[in-house]
Amino acid sequence: MHEILSPPAQETGFIRRDGELMVEALSLEAIARSVGTPVYVYSKAMLSATYRDFADAFADLDATICYAIKANSNLAILRALAREGAGADVVSGGELARALAAGIDPRRIVFAGVGKTTDEMRAGLGAGILQFNVESMAELEALDAVGRDLGRPAPVAFRINPDVDALTHAKIATGKSETKFGIEIADAPAAFAMAAGLSGIAPVGLSAHIGSQVSGLEPYRATYRRLAELARGLRAAGYGLSRIDLGGGFSVRYRDEEPPSARDFAALARAEIAPLGLPIIIEPGRRLVAEAGVLLTRILYVKPGLSRRLIIVDAAMNDLIRPTLYGAYHAIEPVKPAEGELRPADIVGPICETGDYFALDRPMPPLEPGRLLAIRAAGAYGAVMASSYNTRAPAPEVLVSGARFAVIRPRRSIEELIAEDHVPAWLS
Image 1 (tube, rainbow, N blue to C red):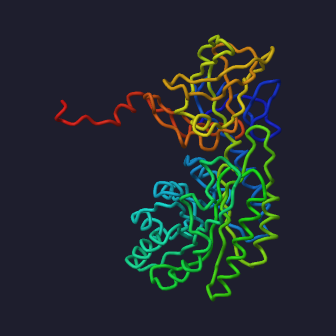
Image 2 (cartoon, rainbow, N blue to C red):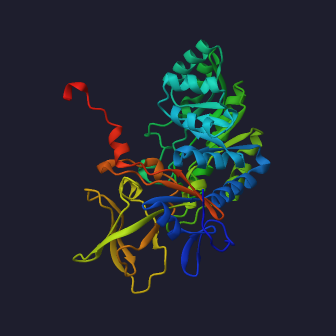
Image 3 (cartoon, rainbow, N blue to C red):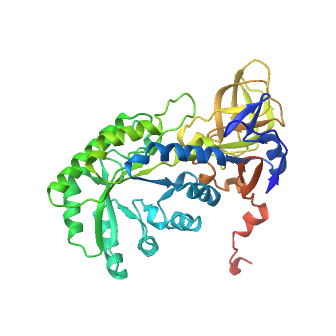
């Protein structure tokens, strides 16, 4: 744990004081000097405030908030959210193990994903999780066999594919019928009928998740209405329901988006789902962590180009792949004030790929080597998707709370990276 003397922050998260970008009560520049760059920095105060915003908005709806830990699965992040009362939405046995290690109550854990193995099913059922979100009849049969073998019926919510366009990037849209996710809504009654005859299964509800970074309310409204209509039909057919999982995908601001508020989502759930009288589950991921994190990187070189500058930094696509994978926009700004005319620049990393960039043709002030830049809204799908491509150690992670910070994932040395490989004796 480190202490850096700095005036107390009046706001949570990332703020400018005397022109310099700070995190809570700390200097980002001081953190970068202490830990090195590139480095991820997260604000605990911002994590907590965003979680409480959701918890307060849904307080009257008997709602369980299960953080989608694929967005950022660092154990310290999970522990911070668990202390606020968060459950977890997991999509692998590894994420389940992380959630349990962070102290999340298994009765507040939902296990989703289209390709659960029987070992993962055993781990979830053995831990006593809240439910499995089942996405196919083949998965249901496999889970039934596990439930019978362990003598414990598996609680199942059927993930329904509502055939709703989430109006988001194609690679993160999951609610249309042509995707791999969920059971077609027309097949739901047959799924419940099948489950009713399986002794290793305890059907408890419905689930839907239409994608990530869903920008408006209308896709949710259409989904919730289809879920509610289906729930009423299943009840009329004699099937009992214990809860409805409304998924997540709530958007954040990367550029000029105006995401609906937590209260907007709660009002929609109150209007469309609450009349069913069932507890609900919501699964925010990106929304809780994205804006609570930045990636700090230093400029190595500034190279003139024919039409714009190339600003070469020490972070790369192995640290943050979203811009090249999704064409994603992240605001990028100098940590300390920079004066001068804004001119186009490409901000690129040192990896041997043309796709290794953070921004193209981005208006930037005059910048020189050594200057620290902050890549904003990098707390989700940043460090968690990092790799060691080009034998580059992924950026470490730091969590800030007030005037304290801690390294919550250290930077691996090149020797540690190489030691992960094993040369067979017959090559010696």
